[in-house]
View (cartoon, rainbow, N blue to C red):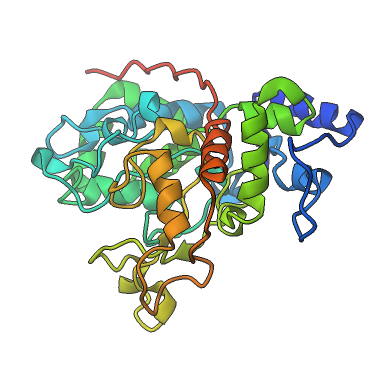
Length: 348
């Protein structure tokens, strides 16, 4: 993978600052059990300074601009009314705020729209992991009859008719022209640049003690300790990238449809990032949980009992104070991300 520097200077400053500031209190005395020290967790949750890009689709400004333009262009749909941004709205945490997404002819889809935040670090995309990478993911909704209801041949034909787009493709992918591959590679390039900004949690990890409340600090200890949250929501993106059955009542078998021979994948769905989580209600793959407090309550109860359920999902017996602290911590993961500039779409 090749990398490009993330254009968030404050993130780099946070890392430098963290090296100069000694470990600070979590807001409560660490328990005698195996809860990691703050210094250990500081390294675990440290933001990266680079965005990874694949060698076969390296970053260039021309590719990012082309991908951004295509992302906001409704002509990629069969109806010419739905763009990628219709469902992945930057003002709604790059999701849509709906219990379940709306596709072609405004018909409800089977699952909640996932965010595209921080997907540069992700593999196996969609809730069930059916796409191996972002390039493959970008092609899916455009050609799905239930979603954007287009065909790649029609999309290529519409795009290459526009002189403005032809110039952009020549700049981004010289000599390749408008093809299914260059369309999806450009969109994937833009999507990799959609990175959550520095949140209050990041400032606190770097040593700014007043960046989050005492309740949130206690919640961080619960998150990494008896709450068992960090088992799946790990690292700076707060996801292990894996697939787990968390015991949510549902007839949707998720990744089990793709891997029927693996018993633990029945009802398993991809672990979502917790970054900017407060902006992205409702929650779970089916949007069935409306608040963070309800999410915490669900995990505390341990979910439905069935053979495929993850062994890490079990009743937690958290106190009311533990739950309130955990919600306070989760709220510190939301950053104030500037909305992207909406590109001018090429016209004839």
